[in-house]
Figure 1 (cartoon, rainbow, N blue to C red):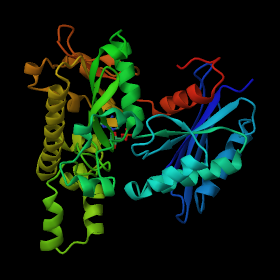
Figure 2 (figure 1 turned 60 degrees about the vertical axis):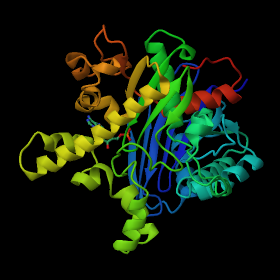
Figure 3 (figure 1 turned 90 degrees about the vertical axis):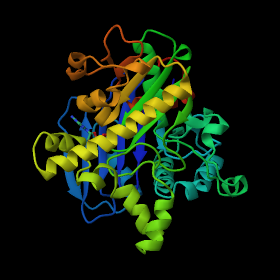
Length: 408
Ligand code: AMP
């Protein structure tokens, strides 16, 4: 009989994050990360459940070396890639294009297709591919599954996925709205239905994933019908360092008037904009702290907060219109789960749409999914912690497990 554990790997351009999950009992025997891959000193952290965590700094030149280090750390705790408990490796893959609508067992054809999508995800898919190829070499006996960030959004109707540009140009270069954070939107919308005690097929949910990257989605009966990120994760909400929605002509203007190159504008909009661009801090904790003070520092933080919240409100309103009937608005990720003032401000004045938060419930801190709207509210407002690792492990296990361990 095959094991019940899944190793989830999230390989970024300069980092690898991992978690080992047991689908039989819901435990997480180990987790860790390797950061600053390719720099002079990289940082490694491995945290076995119940044991002391191990940290060190040393050069890790590439993804191959990083995954080898991860495998060694796991083996030190008797959790190596050859352990019989391990059923599969689940990989987060950022871009699955239109083709990958479901988690997929990886073979050569799947690798080739992920490679074909590199032009639309030049930062992410090459790193994901490096992680997959190395994991396949280290553990050729294990099934490896790709879980795509875009998959949940492939149910968007064509009119929500299309940009209103020349169809021939769009099709030739695969320019359309794909959406990201799909595993989080899938997980959170399902958990929100559970919180309401209803089947996902019966409820309409607006999910607000507010982390360092942020996106909103409109989910009707468990299927995504619109989302705020587009061809790339740049579109939509104001984020930690990304501008979100912007007049595309800003790009032409900066090129013509400021003499900036396309690459410079890319860096400006993706890395030096959003909260960071507006006030110099990309961390919402810092923005909130500064807002409590006085003077120019507080004013710029307040403006950044207001721009952030204004955009958020516009998306809530838009998705109320897209869905027609809304049963719940769910806040998730670092900001959504922890920043009560953001939740409060986002629904402030939206009573006409049936939205309100109860100040006391909203201010309370709690671990699990919870309602923060008053009991009489027409639309439930919820805080639902996301768990992308669990979703990836669950989807992976559902595909390759032997069916004896239930999804948690
Ligand atoms: P994530 O990408 O989901 O890990 O979210 C990271 C972001 O969440 C950070 O950059 C912070 O802006 C935000 N964050 C985390 N904890 C808090 C908190 N207690 N209050 C406000 N924002 C927070």
